[in-house]
Amino acid sequence: MVYENIIEATEEFHSKYCIGEGGSGSVYKVELRTSQVVAVKKLHANTNSEMSHQKAFTREIDTLAQIRHRNIVKLYGFCSHPRHSLLVYEFMEGGSLQSVLNNEEKARAFDWSKRVNVVKGVANALLYMHFDYSPPIIHRDISSQNILLNEEHNEAHVSDFGTARFLKPDSSNWTSFAGTFGYAAPELPYTMEVNEKCDVYSFGVVTMEILMGKHPGNLISSISSFSSCTLGHDDEVALKLKEILDQRISAPTDDKEIAGEVVCLAKIGLACLNGNPRCRPTMKEISREMSTQTQRLYYSESFPQITLDLLCDYRPSASTS
Image 1 (tube, rainbow, N blue to C red):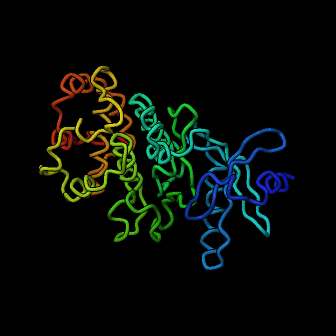
Image 2 (tube, helix red, strand yellow; image 1 turned 30 degrees about the vertical axis):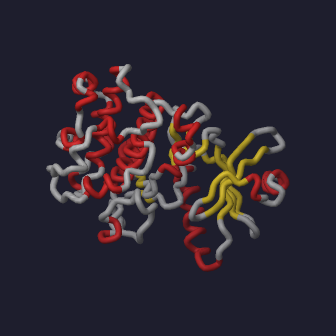
């Protein structure tokens, strides 16, 4: 009955109801007969990659059916039909993080307080997946397109678990490449090893994207090109933090607490982009750093003078995990 309702509500998946496109399928906004609004992902019908799409379909069901977290999108149900394979999720009014950053009006309303909350929400979701769930879950495709926001744009929900993997100690954690170029860890094409540091790198890209208002691009290569835990100092890294922040909104100089939060997130984001995966912090270390107040006050006082090279000197304390 729900399947027929979805077909009717979308007029056979007319493009006017489509709110997003991904590698494995298209997402539609659907109002059910109960007046409930949901998001429906319809997997692409492609015979050449039917097997991989089916794997993504079942993997997403297996993963989301078992986990519940406020910063992870809810899966309401699924439908495997001869004509269509559908996944039904809660609908997020705010759309994707990527769409917000790419919209001038929405980006200007996306203030520093909201941006800090969104980064923390993504961090909370990954902390839960990596440390609070057994076996640990590696998302493998953290990107601004796969982070959905609520209507107020102050709460993040991680979505699209089609490439997620459970880290099982008694099985192989090697696999083919998955993820979004520009967000995937640089070692993945060579090692093909799935571990939590892959998600950490992607989290770093997203964190810097939120702070800068755009994909960090060239800044990534200057940060991740260093192979040791001590990052070098070049012209790119010597930039002042305030110069790379999103210029569409005022610098957070009037609010010391938010200014300290922004500096803290920049420091964490840069550490996550280290080219050596062993030198990236874990999500547990990141969570601990986010809750530490001491350095945040110091950074808020000296915000206008803070340079990226100062933040790149940050190395997290040894993990207690």
